[in-house]
Structures are given as C-alpha cells and as structure tokens.
Amino acid sequence: MFDILIKNGLVYDGTGKAPINADIAVKDGKIAKIAPEIKDEAAKIIDAKGLCVSPGFIDIHSHSDDNFIQDDACQAKLFQGVTTELAGQCGFTIFPYLEEKKDIMKAYVLNGPENIAHTMDEFIERAHKNDQKMAINLAYLIGHGALRANTAGFSDPATDADNAKMAEMLDHEMKSGAFGMSLGLGYAPGVMADQEELNNLGAVVAKYDGVIMSHMRNQADQIYDSLEEMFEINRKTGCRINISHLKFGGKKNFGHANELWQYIVDAQNKGIKVTADMYPYEASSSGITNIWPKWALKGGIPAAVGLLETEKSEDIMNFLRDQLQSEKDGHGIFIVATRGKAPYADGKDIYEISQELGIPMAETVAKIAAETQGNCQCVFFSMDINDVHYLLKQDVSIGSDGSAYPLDPNKNEGRHHPRNYGTFPCFLRLARELNLCDLQTAIYRITKKTADIIGITDRGVLMEGKAADITIFDGETIADQATYKNPFMGAKGLHHVIVNGVLAIENGEQTEARPGKFLRKTEM
Image (cartoon, rainbow, N blue to C red; front, side, top):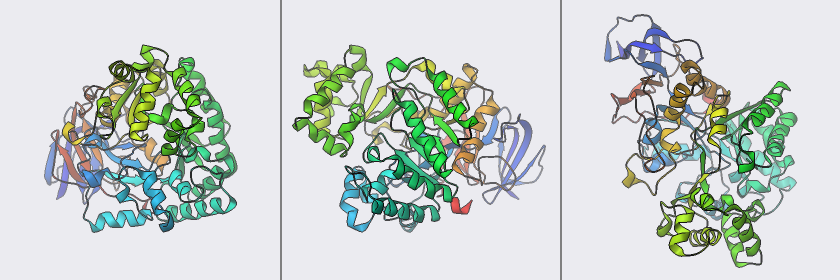
C-alpha cells in the first residue's frame, strides 16, 4: 500500500515539458510510481482534479539560516509552495568560526549570535541533538563574510596567510556537504575583498563542482564592472557563478534592463558559466547603511555608524542628501524594524519620519542609523517595475531573498518585505497575467532549473525514485496576497504541499508534521 496517492492531476514534471494527466504514488518519502491510472490502495488519497501537480518549489536565495530554531512551521515559505531553501546567502552565515575569533563572530552575526557554530556539521548535529524540526528542507552555502571575519577581518586586505586559512576553512565545509559559497561584496567585510581573494576561494568551490552565489559589489551604476569581477572568477577557476537578486538599480539606469541581460547572454555565449536569479518586486530590502557610500562600510556596520562622530561625517551626510532630494525619494525608503531602538520609525517611510521629527531626510537617516547602530531593516524602492517585468521574462531562476517567518503578525517584528511571503505565487501570477512564459516554463524555473544551478539532484523533478517534494495548486488562480502594507499572507490557490513524502499542507491548512531535513551536496 502506498502512503499517498495523488489522483487525476495535471502533472508538470519540472523539466519544462508539456503537462500530462497522470496519477502519482508516494511511498517512504519517494515518488514510487507515475502512471496514467494507479488503482493500488493508499493510506491517503488526494483528488487533484482540475489542479496542477508539480515538484515542490525551490527557493534559490533564502535567508532562513536559523529561522527554524525560533519557529519550525516555516510558514512564509511553505504557504508559497516552497519545499526547499538554499540559505547562507549574501556572504553571511553563522558558521564557520575559529574559537579565538568567537567574539568577532558574535559581533558580526548581530541577530542570533547564540546560534553560531564552529562548522556546518556542528550546527546540524546540534539541531538534531536538540530535536529541532522544520517544515521544509534546508541546504547551505558558506558565507564569504564569515570566512573573512575570522581571518583578514573588516578593514584590511587579505594576506597570503589569510587567503590560505579561508581556503582551508571553505574546503572543510565543502567536504561536509555545503553547496558552494556566497558573496556579499556590497557589505562589510566582503567589500574589502579583491580579485585574488575571490579567485582563491572560487578554486576551492570549483574543486567540488559547487556554485558561487553573488550579491555583487554594485547593482547600479557600476554593475558591468561588478559582472566582470564575477566573470573573472569563472575564467580563472572554472567555478560556476550565479548572480543573486539580479536588478539594475538607480534612476538613470531605468529602462536599460535589456542591455544588462544581453551583457550576461553575451558572456554565456563566450563560455562564461553564469546564471542569475531575481524576485518579482521593484523594491529591495536591506540594512539602513545600504544607502551609505561603500567606502564608509569597509570597517563594518558599527564602525560605519561611528564615522558620524568623526571628520568623515559631512562626507556621509552630503552623500545621503544627494540621494534624498525629493519627497518621492523619502517615500522610497520604508523602515521595517528597528528592534526596539527607534520605535517611532517602525512602519514608516523616511519622508514621513522626517516630517514628524522636523529635520531633513538625510539627518533622519543618520539619526535612526546612530540610534540602532545600523541594525535597522529597510525596504528600498529602487527599481523600475518595467525592468523587473522584462528580466522576469528571461531565463532566470526565482529566489525570495527572504526568510521563513511566521504568518502571524504578532510573532514578527515590524512589517517585512512581501517577497518573504509572496515571491513564488507572485511570479506565477505575473507569468499568467503578463504572458511572461507558459506555465510549464515557469514551473521549470522554480524547480529543476534551480535544482540544477544549486547541484541538487534528488528532487526538483517529478520522477520515480526522486524525493517526494510535491506542490499541488490551481494554475488559474495561484496568486500572491502579501502586500507592503500587509505582508503576512500566504498564496491564494495553494491546496497541498508534500515534503519528503509527508503532507505539510493539506487542503490549504498546515498539518502538525515537520518533515523537512538538511540537504548536503555530498549526499546527492
């Protein structure tokens, strides 16, 4: 007898092929059988008539590194149909660290320093020992920022000894099953890295056929220089590169997304192994110092805020004034959460706050940054929606750049970016409404294509013998409901989600099961 039998569904296998009418049987966490009609008995029968049956969606860019420790329901992602997340992004991870650098690592992590671990193995083993469960699967990258914080630090170029130690640490984690490394070159300490340092680590990742996921140094006026920096890693090492949350920011770049994409395609045609992912929104989300000059970030965020008390203060303020010249500019920066440090700012935009305080907008940003020591999450409306839609039409994967938060607003701090809750149904809705691509292609781009980029081989397609991660939804009504004003909403049109052969969502409601597991590249 099978554990689950899905009957009468329209099956999209994740490869991009046209769907077929078929039944799917699940047994012991695997897809046991796919056939036009399966008459065998099953403990649970799901009638999927009129619904799409697809591989569980894979979030290629997640920040859910340790969210499961606080809340194992993983609702923000599960209620989009996501069954696997790739965490450890933008150069940030809570492992590895060297014992003698423990205080530095805790300061680097800021939020949740109690969860840092010497290695990925230690982190996973601790979770198992503490019987910590999760609703969906987690795979990990190793953050370049963590490697650098433990060696060269936040202010200095890497020495030969630093590069050797970073490579040694990364090699250990790749042997343990990490899927690659992430870069956060717009943040400290990644902003200090030079090409030699990046190539050195790229060679380690390439050795294990891993991937580098890159938050590039610049995603606006210097984006082509930043792309070339990434391409050079591939040229020198052969390491595969994925451009994270692809965008072309800055007002003067609006309308030029076609040129940006052609630049990437030309590189691919020349043999550069580069792919990209993005989210379907015109706003990004990051810390408040993300709009500061990059030179100010080279010593880390606390040090950057400390520059406001030095002779560099006026240089920073002039930079901020240049970016905040109009009321519209102020409305374009929304404060998500100040973690109790500046509660008057939570849930408001910079223009609104400046009016309440009676001070200019640049001074408002500086005041909030100082009071929060830079630990303040913001939403930045920095992209052109037409450019976003153009790029969504291209052969990119989809990643939320978000975390697996609870759906209950009372369990959250501030109002998160809706991408945390709506990325995948938003993409599917836009694909349908704007004719971005057909449904089988859209599904391919959030399942098998993503799995191939990451290096996940045991799921991402509906095939006998593969892991039974399955999402069942209404292809005509699937849509996002999360908004900037009320992000705490799951997808419309989502019916069932199966993770490792166990129902995690049944008839639109979450079950008590927490069937997620840690994935390792070494087990693929």
